[in-house]
Image (cartoon, rainbow, N blue to C red; front, side, top):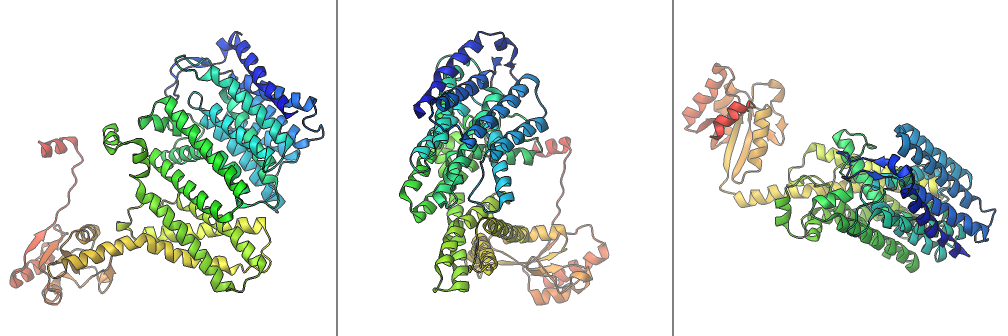
Length: 604
């Protein structure tokens, strides 16, 4: 009887064909704009046909008894889709303000939650409602943002709906989700010929009324199937995340870029995943096909994890998947490079996974270090004689700790730095990232399960160990670089004394440390607050009037003065001492000419 949902395809196709011949096709249109991808005025009526197909397939199956009439969650999802469709249609017609759109999405989510949807893997009722609300509203907007290129949103939604239908038959039997996902799949498939056809112009867009229905429905399927299982496994928890990974990646990338650029997140733009693929040399059709293949592959792995039922394989597979997605997102964020440079770099896959292999290695190394840290903390606190509950909580907690680490490490920039030049700020960033991610993991676990005899101090020990390990992994390059330079240049390094411990002097110190064959023995400065202190590892040996003594004690090969405009009487102490010792002295001047005329005169 669930096959009755297939009526959604002809129902949607008939409605869409009729709309193209109606006066609405001339009124509800999207004209070309600078921040949009299309170049021709196009009707945005597709959402009406998509919702009509979804409603026809779902209600038809319900009338034939495929779904029990008392199935509240089924009706709640359908009612929520109707609400977001209505608000989306109003927005397509009169352009609602963002607050009104979000209000409609929250109202739709409230209806679905009142009908019985919830995140049952979370034991705290308030947190469960908050997570469910965030998931429903977030995915609704994710597909709204994803609808930025012909065929993209409908294709990815159809793929995701197909996987939810398979899951509803195999792993988590659910007649309501099966009917709704089949109806959504058929409605999306019926829309595609009107939106993308080889060699023909686009006939219509789906508009907000269509994209929001797709996003809300798919998010609700996740709540009604895998996340409704109280005794969930890691693979079960990841099913909706992997099936919907591409829209999640696109939304995350767009959100971060727009926040950094100071632009509103809801504002349209040509900075989505699909656009970035085109900027990197793919055609529009190939960009859509590539994202569809990625989405299908991720959905297939999510089902495979459930079938295998092996937690270790799942953990390793998810790590590799996540590492590749980080690589993919990192590559896509690099849109400002010159096309000629990109062409020289080689093929698309080579540029994605070879050019950024350093970041891939960092992600994999962090996985090993985070796992080792948490396991070491567990052994230090519990030992080898652990109870069954302690082992169970450890196995369940490790993926959460890993997810929290990556969720914080990425936005705090732990995969961006050139760690050869790491300093105190980078160390503070590492400590902050570990502490925040530990707090997130502990808070989530506290809300979702009972620790009983599992010691909470394990998380404190883990935070200290992880900070040390992650810090060491980031700063080893700096230490190794300096150590190798020291060994390479031993016996032939030039000893340099810097006069002036201000900004210019410290900047010169950093440059000389990165220059083979140079060794800074210290500073000379007249500020008594700096005497006998170390600045970036170099001692402040005294004032200018002590220059003769300092030259004897430090034995420099050259003296560099970074304060050429200091009082003449103070510089004379240094000049005279260098003359008496027969040491070369050089004044270092750093001047910046910002006037265009000055720049031109120096480049001719």
